[in-house]
Length: 502
Image 1 (cartoon, rainbow, N blue to C red):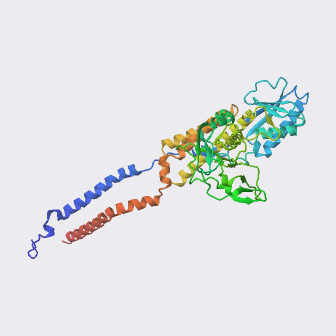
Image 2 (cartoon, rainbow, N blue to C red):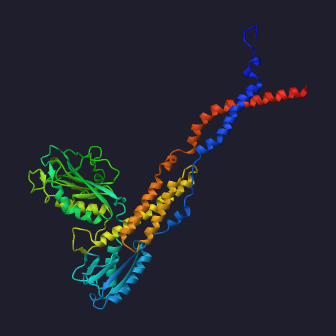
Image 3 (cartoon, rainbow, N blue to C red):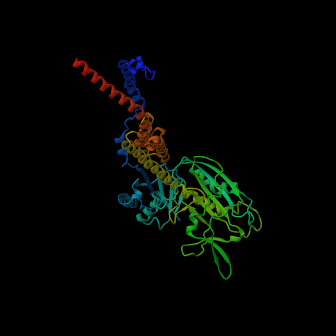
């Protein structure tokens, strides 16, 4: 007992005895040592090996579509065999020198029994001679006498049909998706305008101009159509005013076209969905800004009333129709030119190439088999390249981020994508739609692996963040224990020296 202060001596307290104090301290360290394996197991990251070698081997592979072209022997009057031989030489040279032909293996033959009315096989294109150059269903090409006069001219026509130029459309074509929403909107700039349109006969216009295209493209995509009418859709800028002696008009410069859509005040989509949306706008300027024309680079008005926004949609500017008068409803006849332009824009956005110059179609209101096959091959190749790039990105990320988890789900998706790619390559000799289906499955599996929630988490949680979280937690526990352990070791050594000295 401390007589001066009335407290007991700390050395006389039972829990302050060295042996008890050391047992208490030791129990903490025993718990920590036993907890380390459990902590290590619970916080360890599962990293299953990916088939990196197979992924890297896929980067250089491209599908090659075999295409058979048959010349109708009776139609070419004995010139079919030499033309076919010369045509094969020209096409072989084009394949070696032009990237447009790199994915096609074309071989021209002569069929003495071929006729224009026969049903050609899915991979055979027949060519005959007629009055005009026309494509017919299914996969028939009738050449005019002039176009059929030499192998060079035949090769030129086949180039535009089988291998259309891709570089000119790659910027405007939307990325492939299984389903699209098509949003048709009638926009009145000013609700007080004398030319306000209240309604439109959109069902009839869609049935006449859009439905034939959708019926042909339904092997590639599913479509959901929606429409609306807005009565107040102001522009976000002032059009250029052009005053002449006889009239005043307004114009849109090329720069104005890029900012024409007023996203802040126009509600262009009526539903929420993850499906890509293609917009088609019929814009009716206010009466105070009519006529509204598109200007060329020199600032001169053009006759063009329609323009395309790449990967977004198309816009048609409808100035006052003289024959409409004061009517507030647009009939199917009034909408004929508008939806004809929308149909062309829809085809362009979905990757459908135009027929070559001088080539007509026996059914101009729908897509020919030549165009459909070309877009099927284009989309299949796009999906295959996208799958290869996605898989390569996954492998690269896993190699760069050592703590990124890779579980069985990710590896399974990668393997499924690789298997689908192999199936796509093996299907090139069959229907193009089969190649597209396998390529679509491959891209879906690769995207599912890339956006796996377990992998995405660590893309935004580097190791530095982990240290910043754990250091304040463990430092506050470890420092007192380490200091206490050092103090007890020092005390034990001192006591041991005293005992040894006696």
